[in-house]
Length: 506
Image (cartoon, rainbow, N blue to C red; front, side, top):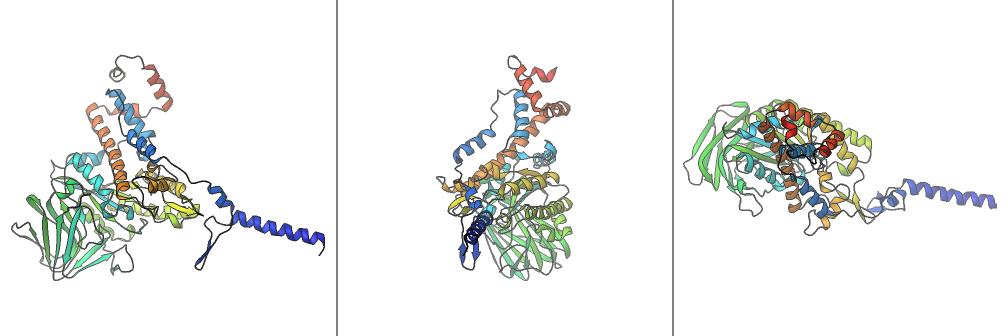
């Protein structure tokens, strides 16, 4: 072989290896039961595992909720303006409209006077299973606005909950839009507000009880109002409540293809109860509430990417939302789509799907406020090095952009955690805040996310309250709309002022 041929052969081998080094994925290529790995540029780019100081992040998040001011009106306004516009832990508002939650807060504040229970429906993936995150938000809102009880449950329990105990007997068959291969699918799309329904026929019973779980919150144990949302029922359908030995009370329903709401108000809290159904009906949800006020309903949809709601009958969903006085809808999704997203085109396609879901809720719930919660960080091993999925930053930013464009608020849980690489450190934390799968929070981690969400929402309510006391919308609007440079100039000019509130009353 000529020397020139040998040189060309060697250079060709190096060229092929070089191309492979640039193009081979860091995670390798699956071939049957094997995973073939090759040193690659993508792997080299990963670098060392990020070491985020989780406790420092948590401390900064908690400090961001504190009003570190002297108590003057001016300082208070400055705190709220900074929180609503530049605090990374804030709920992002469409067009920075600080009045976004005002109509919701007005209803919640007047719930007891109006003898209402206004509902928050928290849809999410497996991060909210067992009533995690939702239970914290429920407790904190009920502490402010009143109300109690664990909220809405399905007649047939699919997942355990820290906030309520339940069981059933008789011919109750559950049909669910989301579930594994064992989940039954209906021949129609009347899945209802909880994305499922339970078909009852003959005589069936659902029993429930106040939870004794040590992880449950106090308000969840207080049940004094029981309601049922049902539909497509037979003539003379009966629902009878028996609670803690009290006299049974039966509700009789006329035949109706749409939704029907029935309710029992009890003189005091009960520890357990049983609802007996007679006849044929679709049971969309059972509500276990307390005094007038607010509650949060948890609908955990394991494996769901949040793209299934448009498959639910619109008139039924709209009627259900109106009958149950659901006034805040929380959508917490993104995690289940993350592992199968590899490029911007796939993200764009997912955004189109989420866009349709948001518009669906805006159509069926025109009186409701909508809040989207993005995915948590998720860890993946790259040749022994734990890092975030490569799409996490772009996916999170894309969901936020989609939400804000649709006039929907957004809470950036990914960055509240600490951003890229945070889940790996949550898992290593003592005690652990993340599960060994590097996907889910532990109960402690989920509880902390619930507290952070609650604190942020309550700050918006506190600002709403303060604006009512000021009773000068134009002055608040003028103050909130100033640019950052002007703000800093005014702060500097006021350093030696004796009365910092003078600025407002000239």
